[in-house]
Length: 494
Image (cartoon, rainbow, N blue to C red; front, side, top):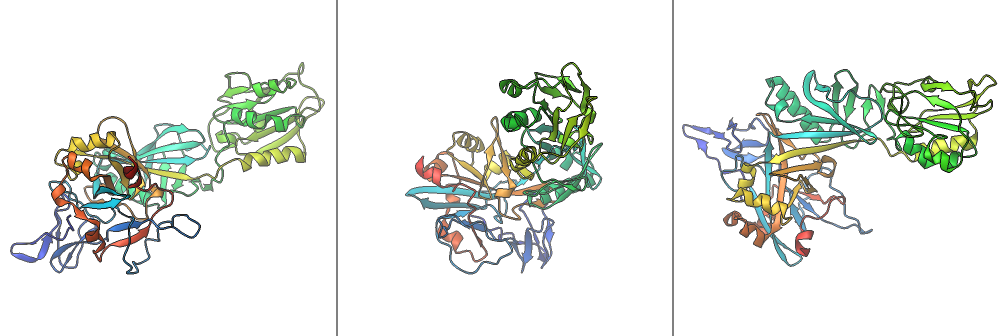
């Protein structure tokens, strides 16, 4: 185990220490910190400024695991008791890992000897994927996303009910100008530490995004994620509209649904209403491109729903026809009755119809921003785990080794290397740091059986028992997040 307190003062400058935690090699004066603020010169000794975080799994009276404590709360001095998981938060780093990882900790869980290798990885190849629950148009695909005037990412493919951003990445961190890299790093650090960030899409919207919070788009705080596309909404509520309405048009930027033409309307043996909407017909009752995308009804630019009505066929339609036009969130809705000239006239919405509109809103989930950190655990980081780095990759592939970030489960992408993705909301607060190269610093843990660690050529001589870590007075204890699986449990049962 390395406690990052071994660097000696430089010859001839007894008060200054050189930090060897990363290639920046800061020369730190007494009482000062390095460029990353994670190491300091304390009385001539290089010292981690952040305590190592140990997560303890505790059960409340209802049988639920207690969530992480507020990071601002001080350690109360109580000795932690197993089961304890040593996270990478505050562990320090050995980048570029010419020596073993800072903490390689053994403990026994459920009768199985386990090892957790803990470090704070320095990630130049990393990015942030932001899922924004909204139908509002934030900007065309591939549009540049800017923060503080600098390009920091782009709009990527929209997903069901969400707009998606891809932010950061090595080309913005190191491939552009110095300010671009600095702003990109600060933006990613804030997002990963669950703080709000203001962004602007070229040719699109101004956004405020924050993990676990509703997005703010052009000053509008989103409340609902759509229940489905227009066609799906028709299918979900057709039976409840049947008998109360003669036609329903669900306005949607993706697929606008028309009830009487739709398969659901035919199943109910509804009479054709003769109302033709604009756009490109896909299958019966499903229309593409009824309007330009925007911040109006159903993610279109429409503010007047009747503007998407192309014609009303007098051979099919009739006076008194009851028409509902509604968005995919139920936030926009209008009720019309056709007059003797077959013109839609606004009318008071019947209670039964309004109830279904409200039910659309009831079935919408809250609109939130989700922030996923994505990074590649390169050969250098893996060398801190084993003298033969490829064996760690193979062990992860075989699921003999579990990868976590701050204790949160990570998705490991298929293919070469160890490319991980994690929901930052499942990590403790302030899990991430940075170095001025610029790059993000993220905690990462590799947990496995002791026998498997030995077999992959691990640094067995650097393994220490959990008791030694528990004896460190500079550690910080936190309760385990009930949303996360216990990293040691699968190992005991495998």
